[in-house]
Image (cartoon, rainbow, N blue to C red):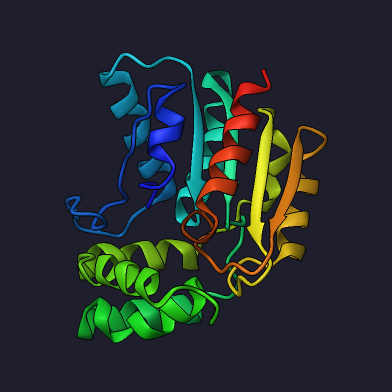
Length: 224
């Protein structure tokens, strides 16, 4: 997910990457998944590495995890970057339907629909094919459990508890998280959050605008 950013960021920081259950080759424990469990799981991983304070960047569900950290691990979080994410992903039924389709037919059953949301028509076909290949390797139970987590999610009442300097990055052509929803997220966090909208990108702006995302995030983290 972050392969284009890692070389630049690693010049300045010790970068640790993590995967959601059932994604990127990670194990998929039995569900249902709870956001508190995913958050505590990440903190345990950081504790095992001796990391006390950290900055966090997360995209989509990773950004949901970032919001949770901003609320529940505020004393450990120096900076926060939230990409293509929001605190509430709408009515539950579409997510429950997607989970059912993936359980029945695997990620391939929704791959074309998901790619259409991740990338606009202007995206490179090679880039789309690369991400489609990554997507279809997801574990069906892990993906379905994550979709069901989003079906029940609503962090809106807690956003004002986020005190870390926060960069909210959204894309102008993302049907999943619109610029208006990005503005609502930044406003709900407060004066410590700022919004940047990247034009003509879908739900994977770090893939379509790798240099821009690398630079924006790096500037935010180095700002002190």
